[in-house]
Length: 221
Image 1 (cartoon, one colour):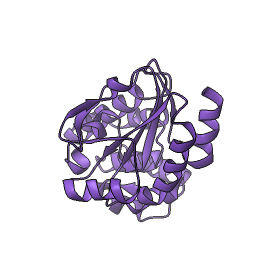
Image 2 (cartoon, one colour):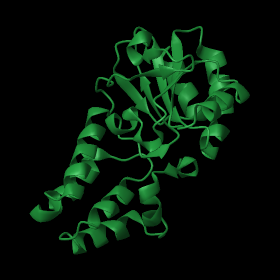
Image 3 (cartoon, helix red, strand yellow):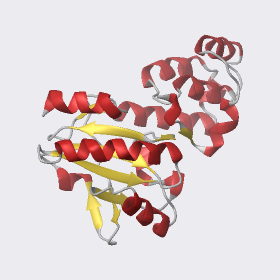
């Protein structure tokens, strides 16, 4: 799913080197006393990070690195990833919809919900939207909904993208770009990403796209 990768701006420079995961881990083990090594651990995580793997690498770092500001921030990020792993209760999200009214994930309780993290300025997100439109048309009458959470900062661009791409499901945003409140809670550092939640609010899938998403919905619906 790397073709869908749009990374948090601060991480882009660290991804310009074509190192394998094994090479990254070797470099991490050689530099356990440097705060810069935290970025290497982030790169190991990639598009769909495994919090367990990243936590084990983080634990190896020197105490001073873990206690640094960067270390504390990264530790909170790992905790957030753990809290949104499959089997966990999906954290609440409340933001404003396109009409300026507050809307919550809780408003869709009792349905299977795909929380779709995207933005109008994200080309891979826009490329994925036609697939979501087809999926929504196929399953919307079978207790399935999509909640679009936009990382936009311009309301008009956000609204235009929803209209142009014919995204007829519910959309919310706080217009804070990468500082979107849901980005922190859900550990989102790349888009498009999504989380599939069951009627009880339990996470049952992450980053399912295209036919993979359709197969999962056919299985549970």
